[in-house]
Length: 380
Ligand SMILES: [Zn+2]
Image (cartoon, rainbow, N blue to C red):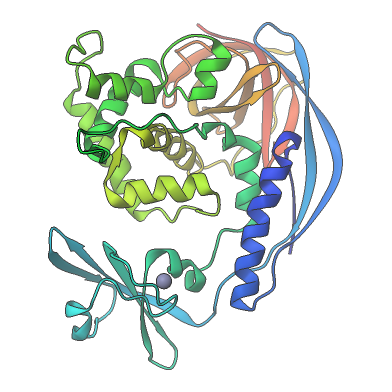
């Protein structure tokens, strides 16, 4: 099957590096690798909030997709260890020998190292294997090339540079619990929205979500930051719960690191920039669960519209002209409206229900969803 999509031209080399990794993994497993063919460079014309049109370069990509995995295995259960206590979770009867299994064992890669959890899988012949989480993808399937392309078309900007390490007196980095850090981050996101490093730089103002988390944990006086509420703690718990069930694509080093931090449940101050991106990853993933199937085009170019909408997604990417927000809305008929803007007001936060005034710019299609693009958008 061939999938046709496009990625930002500026992300082409990172995309190729991710695909090379996936192909290398396919080679090791002895299965076919996806075939990538680049097409034309397309200039997409977008309009910023000042109504200035700008051109962004994308490149077309045709992907001949294959499943990068060993066939015939199914997941039976998980064995976990926490504070020295072993727990098992299984979908089917788990042979009792796995209750006392060594957590350093992986029957696939045979590398011995401490693991918090191992996964038990079984093939059609009834043979069981115990594998570590990173090896599991060889059996359940690696990221698809299409999901990598979607990452490099939109989310690449959340990658933050490593900050200087903060050491304790013993020279060992101080560790903080993910739950605590995410509660602080949730407070920041609730008040200021998620701000990545590139967003803060492009806007030339403000603290990043990660800066707020660091300020909170390092400063003895964090009274200039709002209090952490029960709602913030609940948001952190929701994200942790969502993460534990999400099968995230870890082909990129960034997602690999983020996943490792979430799995470990703690991280050093140096990694807070990576951890805080979970807010953007979670927002994007939950946005994709919105039902777009009813969406049809409406209106004609230059039509002035006024309607009730729900904001279902807020994300974007950096361009040489600044940060481009992509705000996706759903109207009462279930039609998708997309507004690309350099600066959206805080009213356009995810989940917000608004009445808007706008002008129709045109119609396009993104991943099979018909969307009506709008400009000069105002919440009224
Ligand atoms: Zn392994």
